[in-house]
Image (tube, rainbow, N blue to C red; front, side, top):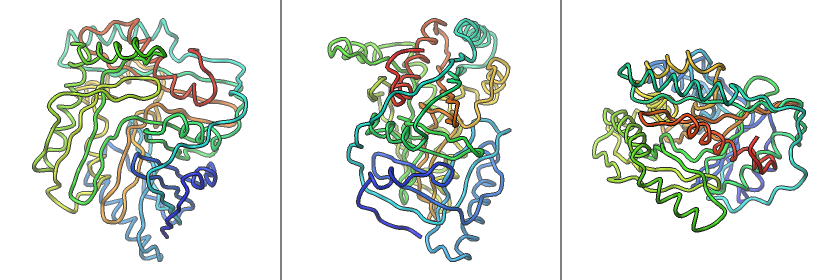
Length: 389
């Protein structure tokens, strides 16, 4: 059942961890509750047509159970060893473009201890190892991530943290997805993986970033330096090329923005390129497109298989749903999927915050470490911590 809701605040206030799925894009918001059917285990490295078949069958099952316009909501993981979390909800409530959410209230999140996984020293060493692989192989880019584990965390709950993310990131893709019992993936991504709206397909790859500054002049200079950075432009071009090539089999009249532009979030500047095309086959769904594109070089590297292998050998943790994709797909095939970055896994007494940086020729270990620290700030600000940890 689909319900139109006037107030975006209603969606946020009615969100319930482990019972709800929340997704807000610049165009609209949705709150999905309950479960009619679960998509059989699949992952983004399954052939895209296999994922589409499973989703199509699950939507047909939901229609047979009396859902007139069912949709699938959920998340795709980064690595194929983790099962996807996709389901057909019982109810879906929609809003139009969201007004600014109410400012957060309450004290900042407290915690007993912070664990860096890996440590800054080990992360810098990992960047050095990635650079050696770039020099000695066909790999052009490797994305290396790290995590902050806030242990003994004291926080007001996933719903309150979601409202803070929505307030702090009014233009972002804000999401909340239940994972295993007691854990919720919360995030405010700046990056659209892919959207299908009728025959129009849109993607907005991001790569290359720089921290924002409180001083307006320094902030403007940071954006200008990013637009002129040879290293960042090269990293960005690799991602754009891969996304465009991934969409070409599905689209005609594919248009790629000539030059990257700046996209701003409260904490970072990003290099951004808009890609649009017309769908060749109306049977191809937004989830089919997402499965075909994911993971892009923005979160993995290129070539995909070699970069994935390097990540598994260098990174000391399982990314789970960090750098996966979150979104929805309806029974017509329309939908939108955001890259699951600027996010954290939240449990009752622990918060795991993730961030990564793209390693290409010319990367500097200290600079890549600083980039991940800047990316942590999106979630740290949302939990009331206005400092680097």
